[in-house]
Image (cartoon, rainbow, N blue to C red; front, top):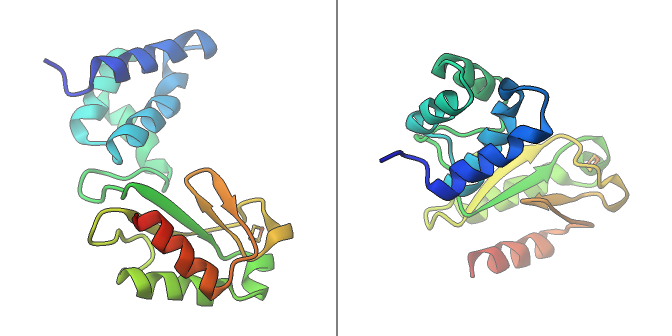
Length: 159
Ligand code: FES
């Protein structure tokens, strides 16, 4: 029996027709695995490699090139909260908001709350400058943040 679920393997295989070759599916496969498992364990890398006719080292090279992926020692929480700290957001207090979120969750940037519900990370411009300071919750923008809004957001994500 494999490490990846049949459903996950099918999702990876379903990417094949959309890419020019198997190797090009490495990145989408890593995203699919991390979305489901909240990290990319070694065994998952081996299985991705086997499915795509690559060596595990090639899959690992791709994974480790991007800071986006987590290994099994550093899994993501249920929600990934990206707090922007680039210029537009920074000028409007983004660093203080990030500090505030980290204090509330008792973590450093990159850390996950003890209940496993929220991983808070800093991000560079997330494309919401018109609503600075802002954050991304998984793929959804939250704009015009204030300390109070960050607290309400954290409470919402902890429910
Ligand atoms: S600088 Fe924060 S979204 Fe662009």
